[in-house]
Image (cartoon, rainbow over all chains, first blue to last red; front, side):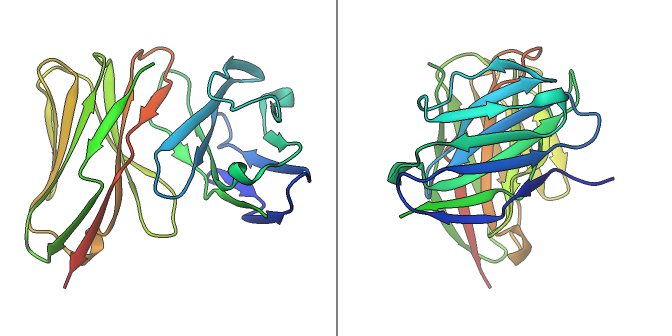
Length: 113
Length: 112
């Protein structure tokens, strides 16, 4: 069974540019989460999808971040325009409904210069 | 909002020594999970504790959930170099909703 995949693995962009991160959860997992880890800090929750619906987006930093999960399969997280403080590793995780174990993807390391 | 504190942030131990990381929540938790992230890797689920006072073991790892369901610990007996990594606790307020709040993590370095 394939795990959670994320693309790209690394992205280096300049301040003001746009970046879109993609996450493909494990097939059949209705729950999809986005997290961000800034170096040396905690893994911070961004938002949670149940199928195609946003269950909780309380962790989204501001309106420069837009997450979608059309069709309830893969998800994208767009940052527009990117700022320096957006740098970090963005993790996606998925889980089955009613199961708390989350399976993490390898992450996308975003560097904003 | 809910906060999950984790200490220590860093720990260096000689191979063979024991190691413990502690997690404390500002609110009573429904359950707590532990994850391990190897250097350069991603968090991998280790275990979930649900019951008050629960203790679970996985080989050299012992996980505890406090009676008040506000704190937890992970203890590793006789560390090995393969134990190197960052250990995160993650608390959940509601078992149904499943949003978790992660601690800052404890980075363990094992000196051979």
